[in-house]
Length: 320
Image (cartoon, rainbow, N blue to C red; front, top):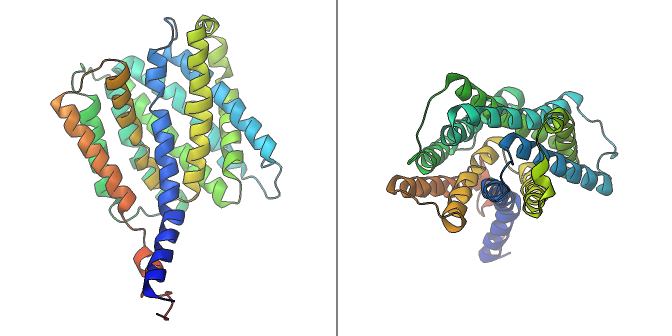
């Protein structure tokens, strides 16, 4: 086999094994980034907690239906009960903690505390529960992305630090990390991504039923409200988490958490294009740093990747 053919095959393996799963994660984060715009375009009276609860109910039902249609729930193999329960609890706790936190400390600070703490919590939980060490360069890429997200979101917003609000948003970051690490453990145990997402969000929806039942849902009776709810549930939740599950299957959980920071970049872009928002100089700098962090993380080689995949390294063919 010629060297050019070896290089071509190595590049194909690289795309299939590493870059494609990361593209799935980033695409999921882009879909998550549409939630703020969808909520802003919803009718008056659509409170954040109500919107979040309806989103999980619709998305959870769709994901559970998909899992049932594919037969993944009854597939041979044992469901790890603790991991399944933790994934569902993480989904529900994130909604409660995030919306309660931003109500006290503001959307800007609450969002930054949540998205900034999630990669750190994920890295810690991944190390403790899975002995999964971050990829080389993960710390630098994550720092760039988190600082960039802070500069993108915070300028132009008044920030009032409410200790309880900050704690609640830290709880949201920890809940996301719990969901991600538990979901990764279930996939490693042989469960299909669609089944994992279906049970996690189906269980989360059940836990959130009391919140939705006590919320004002009159906004759903309006066409604009129903359209927003369907987009949030079917696109920004069901489709997004199908993609996220596919990506998480082939991506270290710490890396997936950092790639998810594409969400605020998408939200800011949509705010500029559709909602007439303005981007400050610091915001533009933040967008650049965030994008640089994501690109750096996507391009960094995994542990042992150069040695194993590239021609001439250990495990490579010797024929030319």
